[in-house]
Image 1 (cartoon, rainbow, N blue to C red):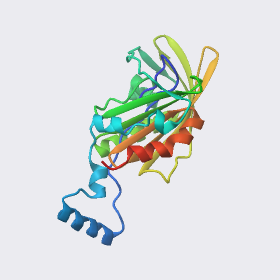
Image 2 (image 1 turned 120 degrees about the vertical axis):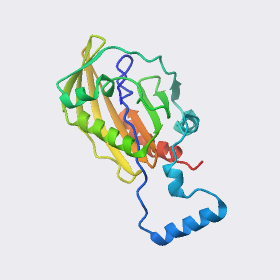
Image 3 (image 1 turned 45 degrees about the horizontal axis):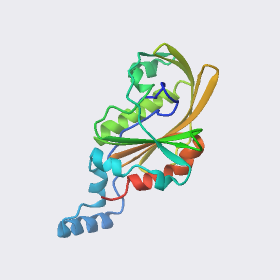
Image 4 (image 1 turned 180 degrees about the horizontal axis):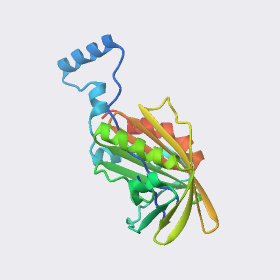
Length: 231
C-alpha cells in the first residue's frame, strides 16, 4: 500500500482479501449446492472466492456515468520511484517506503481509476484488487494497523518532508466481509490535505476508496455494489 506524494495526497491504497465467511443457514447451503450441481452454475460462495482478472476488475470500476455530473477522469501519471524514508513510525518503516507513499499495491490483479470533482478542487480514487484471500486480508490488516498505530510521523520522499497524521475511523460494518477506515492528514510547504481511505473486502475482491471524505462517503456503497456485481 502506498501513497502518491508527487502529485496529491490522494492515492494511499490498501489491499487484499480473504475468503467469504461461511453461511450459518445450512439448509440454504445444501440447496445451493444441489442447484449448482444440476445447472453447472457456480454457487454464490464460489463466485465470491474466485480470483478476478485485471480485465474484469476494470469493468467494475466506477466511471463518470456512475458518479454523475462534475466528475472528470484523471489520467494516471507514470510511476515515480523516489527514495522514501519513514521517520517516527518503526512499524510502518518495517513495511518499507512503498507501504507509506505513492501508487498501487504490488499485486498483478488490480485496476484503478481517479476522478477530479468541481474543477479539480477535490479527488476520489478507486482501486480494486483480487488475489489469494488469506494473504491479502492479513497484509491489509497489518498495513492499516501500522499506519493508524502512529498518530504522527514523517515521510521523506525524494528529499521532500511530509508531516503525516493518522486517525482510525469507524468502518462501515454493514458492507462486505471486512472493513478498514482511516483519516490521513498530509502537511508540506505550509499546506495540508485531508484524505479519507476506506477498504472493504468482499470475498476475493478488495475495494479501496481514497480522497475527499465527503466524496468517499458519498460513493462507497455505489462502488462496492458495482465491484461485487456477479459476472
